[in-house]
Structures are given as C-alpha cells and as structure tokens.
Length: 345
Image 1 (cartoon, helix red, strand yellow):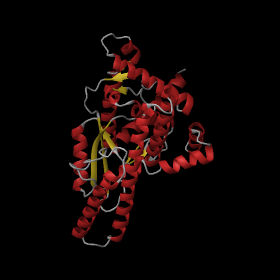
Image 2: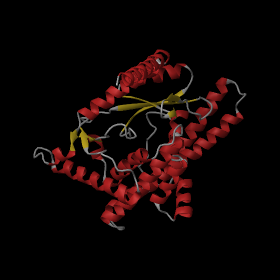
Image 3: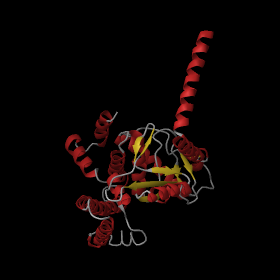
C-alpha cells in the first residue's frame, strides 16, 4: 500500500509539474482557456432542464412546442441520420435576446488566407471565440493594426464536442421549423465527427448534413408538399445562389491578388476595392425566389477577405460532398458519415 501511495504521489507531482511548466510557457493560452471555461460553465449551470420547463405552467405553449420540436429533430438525427446520441439540448438557457459568443476571423489583405490559432485537441483553428465582446474587439483591433482584414460577429450556436451538455439557447427558438432543424443537426454533426486542424471540412460537413437532414426531417414530419418544407427549400435555394455568387467572387479575388503581387500598395487597394464593389453590385442580377432576400445586405458594411473566408469555411465543399454521398453511398447520410468517421477517426 505504501509503495502504491508513493508511486501515485510521484505521478501526481510529475503531472502537476507538467501543468505548471505548460502554463508558464503558455500563459496567454491558459488564460484564454480559463475565460472560455468560465463562460461556458456560466451557461451550463444556469440552463434549466427541458423536462422542468415542459411542466412549468408559467412557460408559454409556443416555447414548449419548440422544445418538443427540437426533441423530435434530435431523435430523427440519431435514428435516421446516424448522428451521435447525447444529452445535448435537454436544457435551455435564457439569453434574454442578447448575443453570448463573439467570433473573430482574420485574413491576409491580398490573399484569402486565414490567420489561424493553435489549440490543444482542436489543432489549428481559423477563428477565435470570446464570451466577452470587448476582448473580441481588442483582438480584432490588434489584428487590424498588423494589416489583416478582419471580421467580427456573434454566433447563434456552437458545439462543445461533447465536453459539456450543450443547451438550447433561447434565441434559437425564434427560428422557423426548417432553419431550427438545420441548426440542431449542424451542431449534432460536430459532436459526431471532428477532424483535427480541418475547420473547413468540419464546417462544410456540418452545413451539408444540417441542410440535407433538415429537408429529410421536414419531409418525414410534414410531407413532401408541405408549406414548411417548401418554405425551407426556397430559402435554401436562395442561399445556395447567394453563396455560389460569393464563392465566384472569391475566385475572382484570388486571381486578382495573384496578378497584382508586385503592384504598388496604393494601386492594390484601389483594384481590390473596385472588384469587391462589382461583386456586391452584381448580386442584383441573381434570380432569387424572393427578390429582396439579400437586398441591401452590404449597405452598412462592405465585405473584405475575412468575410469571404466564411463562404469557403461553410459552403465551398458542400457540392462535392453531395456528389460523393449520392454516387458512392446511394444518398444515405448514415453510410456516408460512417465512411467519414473511419477516414478521420
């Protein structure tokens, strides 16, 4: 027993020393991790169990209906799509209409190439999130001072990849059926499969499975000719047209940056600005189902390289993924995910 205790204490001391040395040389990372942990724990600890809410007479029927709807989406995603079962979305956090998490993205000024951060477990990540908006703004300012294009925005949901019990966020409940189903399936996909240091693959896959899963869910629940399905498909078709236009714009910018590599800085800025203006103005020529869906989207803020990265991160691979799933797996999402999990295990 004494020998075992000595060995245990020796191992504990070595681990403690290792943690101390890591923290000594990675103070910024440890500080950031602690802030994120505190922010996440505040949400987790202040979320109410959905069973409790469903039995609370003071909670509105509309909220209860959305909670039940999310539970149906979750069951469908597990049973029909093969997503990982978990206790996620069995609690609800009231954010009182306020954003919770802000994400900073940065790109080189004359190449659509992401600035990345390295984290344990996750690997290289091309965005950085904060539960404190002022800290996100400080990071964005520092990156701008270094010459990077930046983008700062709040996010509606995120996945902790199984580290915590992800709650329903109250702002999610404002979404219509199709977009709420897509969001839940998107985040469940992250918890099912995560490829280290491959943000673009992870986000494109979650977007693809979220969209395709939402269509299948709506079809199974409401029917192929239902208003809910048609409304979602129309909005998705418009979004696909929008992202295709912006990805074409990204390709044009890539070509421009290659051609002006040795051009004076002032001229580079003018050429870049003019091309982005033309990409934005050309949105008026896209035949959306709803003509005003993206009207004036860039009236207050002009897109830059960091903004264009979003389309690469979330949408550029979806077409190839759909073709691969249909040709090799007969359109079966479960089989496709099983294949990907074996490939990226």
